[in-house]
Amino acid sequence: MGDQLEKFIMGNRDAFDDAAPSEKAWSKIDQKLGKKHSIWPTMWKVAAVLFMASTIYLMVDRNMNEMEEGAVLSEEFVQAEDYYVTLISQKRQAIREQLTPEQQEQFLVEIDQLDSMYVELKKTYQTNASNDRVMDAMISNLQLRLEILNRQLDILQNIKDQNNESDISIEI
Image 1 (cartoon, helix red, strand yellow):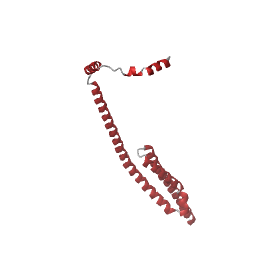
Image 2 (cartoon, one colour; image 1 turned 90 degrees about the vertical axis):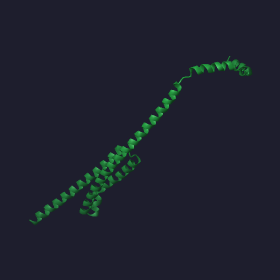
Image 3 (spheres, helix red, strand yellow; image 1 turned 135 degrees about the vertical axis):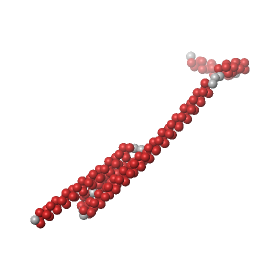
Image 4 (cartoon, one colour; image 1 turned 45 degrees about the vertical axis):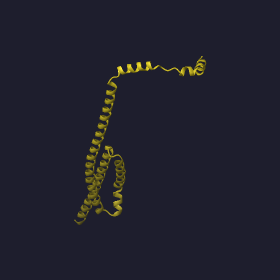
């Protein structure tokens, strides 16, 4: 059945295509559209433009605030990093003064490993500066290095104290 209808339409296509609505029909359509023409479509367009503009403004404002907060955190982080790095270098120097180069290698193995981990964390932080977890891990790394160096200095001091006690007992 569908094939017969299709054949009929194809065979009589010219008869279907030549019919067009009269000018009178088009003028009635225009009149009806003109009467129903309202301001609402225009109002919706204006509302959509205002909505888009306010959304863009809020997004830009939010990004600017995040960048400013990131800059403040970065300044605080730089200060903390400088503080810990200064302490770590002082402790390292104190250990170097008390040990031979071979002993220094043994004592500073853990610190060197933490140094390399810190370098990796710093690379990660530079690529993703707003990541607080990376910044916290970097501070923890610095604190751990400082704690290890303090323990090593305590060990060296204990050894030194024991040697002094044994020297005193030998003299008596």
